Length: 248
Image (tube, rainbow, N blue to C red):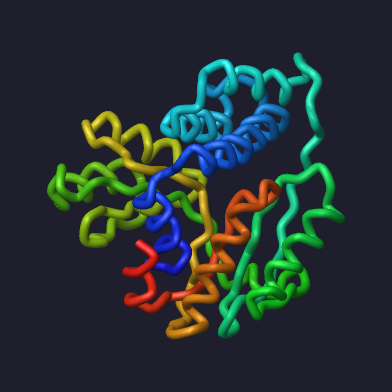
């Protein structure tokens, strides 16, 4: 598992308290708005919007919030114009970071990202400096206590997935972005409940990080995650298991 996915696993296991839920809703509303703006307001014909809506429902966002965000995206309601942007850089120990943002003020966002990187012994890189180290993939996680590996593997591969990995307490299914919706549909039709689903970036090669650098990296990931403008942070770090265990 790449470091990014371990970080995602930590966030899922810790759950979402009220303060964090508000911040998560802000990010999801932005994603819904931009998805509806770029691909239309019908989730049946807009894969990105359907994923954003499903994720919002899974996190107990009220239906009226979802509808309002869609209408802002389609122009039925007045809303903020968000711009998609990304930043590349390095964290503690030289790990690669790819930071995806949705913002209405790029000057503010780049200043905030740069501040966080500097604060935790990282640095902002140039465009293209680390993007080549990641592949764009669809990733699904499934509770391993509920299904056999053979049943998940068969359903996933039949639906067009690339691979199924056993990560102990969960199975991780990966697919090409173009196959994301067909794999999602195939798993559901096979009666397999998906714990989480996302379009993300997976590191081609991991970089081991231990000790103080690992602790600083987790602090940086938390710090960036708390920024409203930051949607996702991807890292090639293979974080020290002792540090991960403490964080979880």
